[in-house]
Length: 419
Image: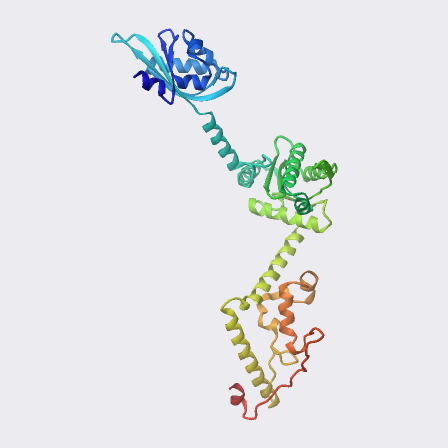
């Protein structure tokens, strides 16, 4: 029994009815740092850390008297003064007459377990690098703030903050210095806001600030304060570097009442601020929404044109083109015989791409909708490929140029031509 007692993984302490320590085991000494001679004859009070209140100990002793046992977490202090968290179980030992003769305490050091658990809980809701709330917990805070503001009839401002040219610094100085820059930015943003406000890191170099405001001007003031906080340079590798933010702002309930839409509008305004030259801020406007809607329409149109060139669709597309060319020749023959021309043919006899994709609607209503922003877009390449015959495309010097072939009409008539 004595060997089991000494080799137990848990610290064990036995006291008499007056709570004076009678004996301890080896694990007790390893955890607390005290030797047997230093604790025998003393009370467990020598381990008190001062973190528990008098009410805590009063409830502990009430449980021992009423139930004969108690267990729970308690902070104690080692001999060197270091605090540690232990899981403690205390049992009362009585004689045959019911009189208390001993108290037996068994404990385990759970400091590392507790710290690991707290770290996991923290990382689930916070960014490890900047210690700011992460996207997940911020989205929850935003939803709760929207609900409170809706009930109270107040306003919110959402500021989407993105660093200008961060990638250049990250690529030039390395990721370690890039991380250091993000930590410094986070500290400056925290100094800009009030205690009731929230700042979070969404990822990369994107930050977001949530404000409870009484009027629009308060968001204006906060955006200027953030811009001014970036005037001073950032110290990286003993050198000062200048970096600026672009800020987009959306308001509740003026711009949106849904969390996702409010975030999207702030993000849109931020990108428009970058297009304006960076180092500035813009409020979201309906014109921005229309611009984005139009760009998405163009993108969908480009995808629709490009889709036939993917996978098995390529063969179907080329098969369709052969049928179109055959029908074109038939209609050309028909036109020569007095039949009305096909409205889907270009003057040169080629099928009209825009005619084939009329579902794109007003996105293609005029070249001005495409050329300014999409001159080098994939869609532009398809438009060029479809409207300019292959024989007329510019080829590099040194390569033979073929003259356009005149349409050949088979003497056998329409049925022969189809063959």
